[in-house]
Image (cartoon, rainbow over all chains, first blue to last red; front, side):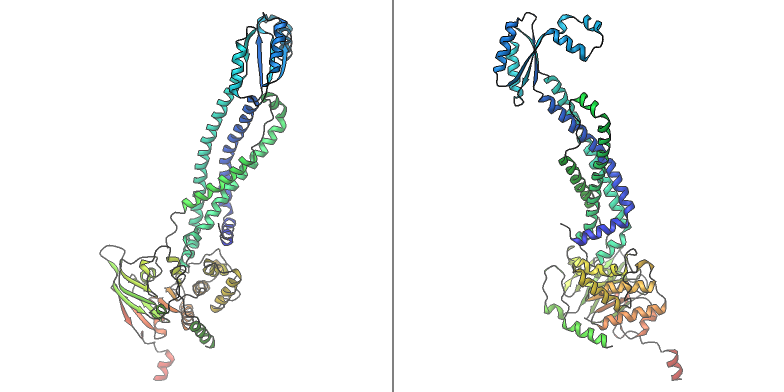
Amino acid sequence: MFSSGTTRRARRGMLREWRLHALSVFSLAVAFVCLGSALLVVTNLRALEERWAHAGRASIYLKDTASQDDVQALKTALAKLPAITGVHYVSAGQARTDFGAQEIASKAELAALPVEAFPSSIEIDVNAETTDAELADMVQKLRMLPVVDDVETYQAWTERLEKLVRGGVAAAALLAFVVFAAVLAVVGSTIRLALQRRKTEVEVLKLVGASDRYVKGPYIVEGGVQGALGAIGAIALLGVLFFVVRGRLDTELASLLGLEPTFLPWHVAVGMVVVGGALGATAALTSLRKLVAV
Amino acid sequence: MARSEDARRVAGDSAFRPMLRAGARFSREASQRPILVFEDVFKSYRAGSPVLRGMNLVIERGEFVFVTGSSGSGKSTLLRLLYRAETVDDGRILFLGRDVARLTDESVPFLRRNLGVVFQSFKLVETWTVFENVAVTLEVLGLPQRLVRTRVGEALERVGLAGRGSDLAGVLSGGEQQRVAIARAIVGEPALILADEPTGNLDPQLALDILGLFEEINESGTTVLFATHDRSLLDVRARRLVVLDEGKAIDVPNGVAPAESEYEVEFAH
């Protein structure tokens, strides 16, 4: 796209005005850190949503009137369904014991809770390939059984997470817009300043017969490099912060979220660098519309 | 002398091939035309006070022409119209048969590649080396670096700056800076050199040296249009002189008579 002469002139220009370009890259890196942080949150929320959506579990709460025969018959029927991969009965007493072990330290408090707070249930593992519609259909059929009180699929949680992810994506999009505007403004100003400083150079180039494209080439390369370096700097900074935080709060985050937080996927990181470069080049091109007239 | 004869022979062997547009072919007919024709050229910056008012002028290939006139008479305007920093209001300027005013913006760089321009203010990039300042003319043409190095070396030798390529332009003296600007103008072997008050910032002796350099360039076959209001330069040799007065060109084919030196006056008496 650009000749070696263009990149050589761009390198020369950047080295001669390295302070100006370093300042520009730093400003861009700060802007990209905001975008990168938002993308990092969205990435992990999405992973969490994915994890919960495919958790593939449901609880079938039984009525107090359900006999052991009813429970056994229901377990056998459920085990035969292709969408169900595991069936496990939890009695009311076991539910109370499990809850006490996890949530309440005092035995007196646990004893104070009513009997109906811990109904017996059948926990089922649902095949990960089962669609939402299939699961909803199954739940509806289960609810019609006389021994079943209620069925909990945790879909409400997934829906809440979905809403959270959508909010995160919207926030990231808004931030992306702000970052794009920042990149255009910062690179545009830097290039205009560089152009002003190299006014004589541009005049000389045009006098000796350089085409506008030849004159603009190095500035566009400089803009692109600034944008890409800003994004790389932001990713590097975020990476360091992420691994420092994760190293210290690894266990807590894993138990809280049910999964280990992940850094930006490589394609998102590469995308940020490419977008940074493209935006920088575009900003440079836009700011060069009016070259020094000779 | 031998060098200028060699240069003239070389120039004759490889006649100038005008290329005002990419891919344009050499035309023998075009090479026979006057290099420059001004036809009824009008130019004004303010309504009602034109700088050029129907100016007519013909300059043949290989001529050395002084353009003079008082400040504001249009010397610089005339040159700026030639390298298309300005456009005429009316009339035509034919450079090798092509109307400069009607060139498209895309063709202007090709026009400028056939011109060498030297300014009073030198217009050098001070942070570049002497070599870089001269080489830029050839780099724009996309010539290979080896050829660029050879030709820049030759040009610097012609202007008396051999071995100074690595010096920064900003640290040179005024006379040296103007030599670099001249090297930049000639390195591309243009058909026409435009010099806009090139000695204006130099002391009288340096001014004479620079004039001598332009005369050497002219001897190698390059047409030179030298704008100056320095009467002492016009007196050095009888050259064709164009005086700009009230927007028109007054042609003095043999210039002004060289002033007699003090010694000649003494011997005569």
